[in-house]
Length: 166
Image (cartoon, rainbow, N blue to C red; front, side, top):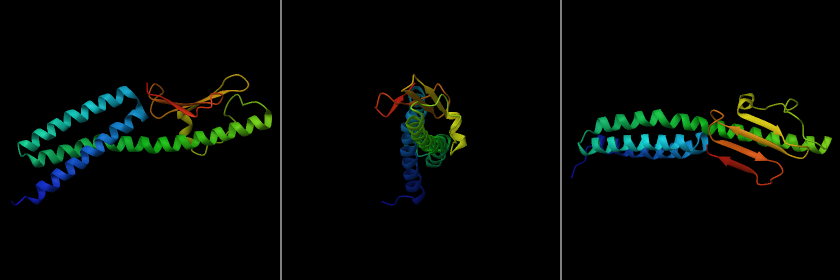
């Protein structure tokens, strides 16, 4: 049986787009929180159903175009937030090293990060430091807006990085 080359390629690309969109939904949970990832998952599911209907009605060009539109609408933002996440997390690890050195030098954590020189100045607006007593601090960061998913580090707990999804 002969299969049109375009149909095969369009179907394959649509499946790859769907897999990338599902990955973007997974990333959105850690970047933007539970509610946003649920909304995004619903949108991807809705468009996947529409794409499947287009496939069964043999509207392959429309299926292909819609798959690409959904891909371009969702995936680049999550990839950008993934890059930002790596950048901010690395900056936070540098801050933790700075705070540890300040503690050993002055026997107390600083009241603010005013003496710290940020390697990535763009990461500064996503990071929040709070001194809690003499022997503790909390370092928090978010990737979008402050009410989104929050990553935080408590010095005294010793658990490492923790995550709150909303």
